[in-house]
Length: 306
Image 1: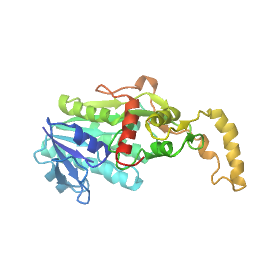
Image 2 (image 1 turned 180 degrees about the vertical axis):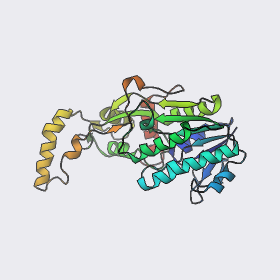
Image 3 (image 1 turned 30 degrees about the vertical axis):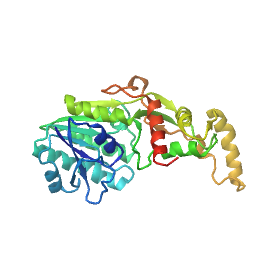
């Protein structure tokens, strides 16, 4: 089976290309300006852009399946053009090319059973993309995957360094060096395995990829177990942070001692949590969240980032 992979040079793309194995002939779709230095040896590449229908048609020549990973994540202005219009162009080109299977990487907030954030341009762009896939008839099967917060190796864009670096650089972590956020962590191998499952079994439809819901303290303490430096993550209850630490920081900020007030300390972020009945779901056997964190730390260490 010949599989065209968009977003091939990204975090998930690099792990997918390393994990597809000999059963698939992978073709990495890359933009003309993209570096291919980190792609696995021997992977075929084709230059194309989601904004150029002619280049997509050429890239899809002889392709059996598409894995669509490419997306704009941080630039709200680019999301409509890349995530929605770009997906529409790719879908149209795939139909013309006679592709059999189309696997789409979505996000947990776009799943029908998980409330989407109306203020998140990224989630809204994924919802719009899914209307193109599930609300229309196509000559190919459509699978969509909904991962939560992904950890794993090959994080060359350092998307998880904000969690690992503070642990590596401090002997003790107390608020405000961490906040009372909540996480749902999955291993990148779960995403790769789920993509393979959709390719190999034609598992059309929507597939959650979720782990257990965790506190940030659990995440940081597990990272600390695998990070050089013996960092200790001190448990400061939220009530203490809210009614003691925050007012203290506010007072220090007013007199110029603290560079920031205590507002950030009491904000409770949510990184992919789901209802309990939706936790630990995937179409394949999952790796543990502890392994996801440990192997991320090991990779950061192996490339000299710790």
